[in-house]
Length: 217
Image (tube, rainbow, N blue to C red):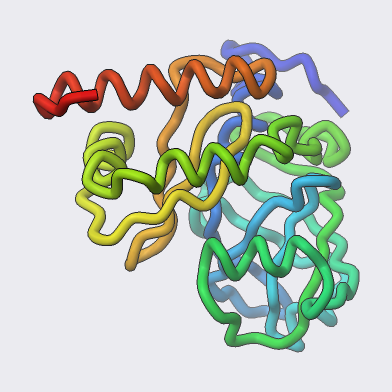
């Protein structure tokens, strides 16, 4: 697979990784059906993790469209494998993002390949562990100390008003915040290289929001 794409040909691999990291919902095509699906990326394996309808779980290669089924969507060909939704950490991660599950078949999905525009990406190149996983709980705790500031960050970063926001995840390129209507992305100005760098980027976001809102540190 080509993993050295240019903007002349289509989105390069780094942009495909950024796009995938930012998404937490899409549409799943399986057995002649298309249904909305909420998912997370497993911090350890980078796999797509979600509870699925039985028919979707039984399809050997469902296709996940991001953000929805369309000609310009990212299309990921998946190979689902059953996982224990009671004990697997990624299932708890899903619940933190999305609440209680409605479907009961928990699946961990290997990404066989992805197509985005004219480009095709190898699934292994997209499934990355989260190097900030150990720092994630502390980062979320810090962001949740001031919910009004977090609301302001959502409005600045994602352009949407969020009531009762809760920061639920961190990866090298930004934060995810749970809202009543879904999950909102707050991107960083640049990718974080490590936990110390991520902490600085978070402090910058907070300072910028405080300055814009006239808040005191």
